[in-house]
Length: 344
Ligand code: NAD
Image (tube, rainbow, N blue to C red; front, side):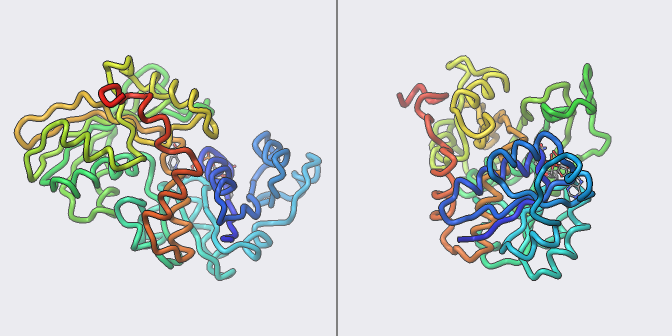
């Protein structure tokens, strides 16, 4: 059993904790919480051991039982998943270093924190036995998920993508915009360079817009392929990847709202959509492919964290790890029922 601890139990941390608890080769030793809030109470109710990263007195005052501090948790795990807010994870590195454990950070940290940015499809092998890794952000994961299969099947000369990003996560009341579309002040946006931390040879440019929605990101992606391919060829290539879900306007799925409606009905942890939803109605002109994809920012990185943990613990077989993760989280299930009406 791989003993796993989670530092930071927010949007990503609580989902990774759930996913770890679903693995038959992993044990969730405990989570590190800063405050004794409702998330800590819900974790305690599930029987998860809580360690305090902030003021231990606040936990005692709240009546929530804690099992110690971060320094105690790191002594009892093989791998720590750091899901603290971007920029905070670097402050915890010394504690992991001192305890001699492995650590996985999230996309809010920079590539240099681990020297290895990870995506299970694109560079699983690089993480086998690694001490540190960083799972790239939700947007970057979404882009790599659909670009890697295209590169493998047809080759890619160039990519241009416009990212319509969600303004906030559903539980974040303090972020916006509430009623605007806001142009990212960085042009190109950082996402293209982030993709290159995993696919270094890809020629990619990205721009981003923030939108007043909390459900998902929507990407408009234009790819110049090296070999001509039909729409059917592209859909067939994607069919080999369970973490890509083909959806269709013909099935009444025309927005992120319907994609998340499906996610809620799938009955998975937190009503999540781990797969990247790609609209079947893509256009092809010569070697130029254009498609839309929707990215559930709260959950697409979750299976990537599980595969990173397994690779770092020494599992060499990429397909075996991805297969275990997918079946434990029901990834790719009900594919025929949703967005694949031609095959049904
Ligand atoms: P979050 O704010 O929802 O959760 C962070 C958790 O860490 C909270 O429980 C908070 O109390 C705790 N925390 C804050 N300061 C801490 C500290 N000093 N020590 C320990 N814990 C502390 O954040 P999130 O959205 O889950 O993001 C976590 C990481 O995942 C970031 O790197 C982020 O960029 C990345 N990420 C976020 C999303 C997303 O859409 N939310 C998607 C992909 C990746």
